[in-house]
Image (spheres, rainbow, N blue to C red):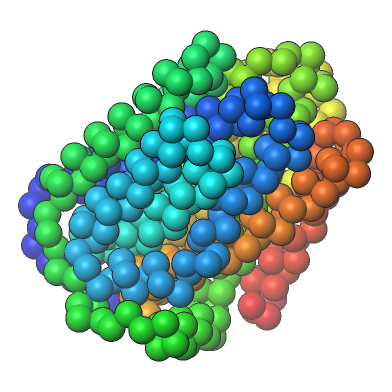
Length: 396
C-alpha cells in the first residue's frame, strides 16, 4: 500500500546512518576479537561456529517480541537501548565472563536493534526512495564492516584487551549518535507486552506475510543469502590456514573486507539498476553465488581469493538490497515494518543456525574446510535454482 512518510528533519537519515555505522563497526570487530579470545583460551575449533550460533539464537528466541517492541516505541529510542545491551555484552567479555555468554548478550542487543534500524527507513522516506535508502544503509554498514573486520583482526593480533575496549567505545559512541535521531511517532503505540498475545500476534503476522507472494519471495531469498554469508565468514577462518598457509587473525578478517567491498559496489549498482518494479533482476546475480564459492575454495592464491570474494560480495549486494526494500514495503502496508523485519530476522537466523550447524558438524566429523566449502557452494546453488524456478513459474 502507498504511504507518505511524515515530515522529518533533514538530519534524521544521516543520524540513522551514523548510528548504524558505529554499531556495525563494533559488531564486526568484536567477532574477530571473540574468535581470537576462544583460540587464546584453547577451546576446541568447533567453538568458533558455536560463537555465531549463540549470537543468532537470540534473533530466533526474540523474534515474536522484537518487532512489536520496535513498533511500540520511537525506533530511535529502541536503537539506543539495543546498543546499550551490546555494550553490556562487550563489558562482560572485558570482565572475563564466559565468551559464549558474553557474545550471546551482544546477540540479544542485535536482535532488538535490527527491526528498528531497518523499520525506521520506511518511516523516513517514501516507496520511490526506499531502495536508495537501503543502499545508503548497506553502504554505511559495508564501510563499517571494512573498518571493523580489519581493525578487529589487527587489534586482536596485538592486544585482546585493546580490541575489546575499542569495541566498547564504539558501542558507546553509537548510543550518542542515536540521540540525534528525531523522536518519530511510534508505528503501533500503546501495545501490551503479554507473552501469549505477542506470540499469537507474531504467528498471525507470519501467516499474513506468507500469503503475500512478494514477501514470501523476499523472505526465502534473504534467508538463504544471510545463511550463506554467516557460514562463509566462518569458513574463511578455517580455509585461509589450509589453502593459503597463513595463520594470523588479520587475513581472514581482511578477506571478509573484500566481500564487504563487493557488497558496497553491488548495493550502489542495485539502487540504479533495480527497483521494486524490476525486482526479479536480482535473481541473476543471486544464481552466481554458489558457483563462485565453489571456484573460491579451490584457489591457493591470496589475490585470486580476494578477487573472487569481492565478486561474491558484488553479486550479494545486487541480490539482497532490492529484496530487503521489497519486504519493508510489503511489511509497511500489512503487518508494520518492525514486525516484517523481525519476521525476516527469524527466517534468516533459522537459516544461519541450520547452515552453520551443518558446517560445524562437518568440521567436528573431520571434513576439511575446502571439502566443506564445495558442499556449501552446491547447497547454495541448489537453493537459488529452486527459488528462481518457483518465482518465474509463479509458483511462489
